Every structure is written in structure tokens, then in C-alpha cells.
Image (cartoon, rainbow, N blue to C red; front, side):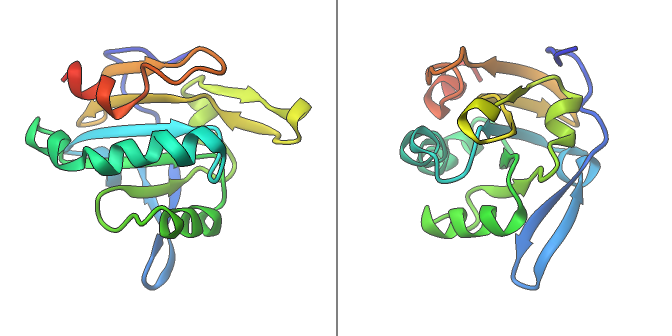
Amino acid sequence: MTIKVGDRLPDATFMTPTEDGPAPKTTADVFAGKRVALLALPGAFTPTCSAKHLPGFKTHAAELRAKGVDLIVCVSVNDVFVMKAWGKDQGITDEVMMLADGNGEFTKAIGLDFDGSKFGMGRRSQRYSLVAKDGVVEQLNVEQAGEFKVSSADYLLEHL
């Protein structure tokens, strides 16, 4: 079943790159007591993800914060080392927290996974964005396959 507005995000553990190496972050660590904008995408270093999706959230980070977002996170079904390298490649510092859902457990639990095996990618995340307040979904924007419209930072800003 796909998550919807009003639902609580499930318990999950992500990995995030830090100065001291990979560190676990639970759903509670990330979302409790905060208003969080989350962008999720099929894969680090993939064309739309690298050219538009993540850069848009980096560019609009201050505007999102001005509209009440405490934290911006990027989730992908990639390992933490790939997320670290991609963040570095994209010039991400503290604008966006990079979260690896390496086994896709969070993505599957919210019903937004897909099978990319025919492209050699295995199970991946659909492209979407959401806003959650204290772990409860306030806004959910899921893309149709192959599109990039409703999950963009611009779209999210228009609807905050």
C-alpha cells in the first residue's frame, strides 16, 4: 500500500555519510519534531537526478527553510558510499542531508519502490517529494514514470 497524506512514516534506518564515516539515522532521528522536505529518486548519478532533481533542492534550500522547512533530505536506494560521492560531486554541504536506503526497506515500506531490473538497476525508488511534520506526511508528490514535474523543488515551494 502506498503512503498518503496524513500517514505516519514507518520506522526505518538509513545510513548517512559523515566526517567520521557512515552513520545510521532512524526515521525518528530525521523526522521527530521537525518539518522535513524529502526528495527521493531512482539513483545517484542518473541523468535527471543529477541535472535537475537534487540541484533544484540545493538551489532552493534557503527558500524552503524560509517557508518553515527545518531539514531537506535526499533518499535513494543506493549505498552510503555512493550517496557520499554523489553529494560531493553535486557540491552538497549542509543544504541537503544525503540518506542511503541501501536495501530499499524504507522505500518498500511506503509503497514507492519499483522494479528496474529490465534496466539493470534492481529495486529502486520512484521519483517523488514529500513534506512531513513530526513524521506525518503533509504533502506527497509522486511522479509518473519518466516525468519530472511534481517532485521538483519549484513545485514543492509553490504548494507549501
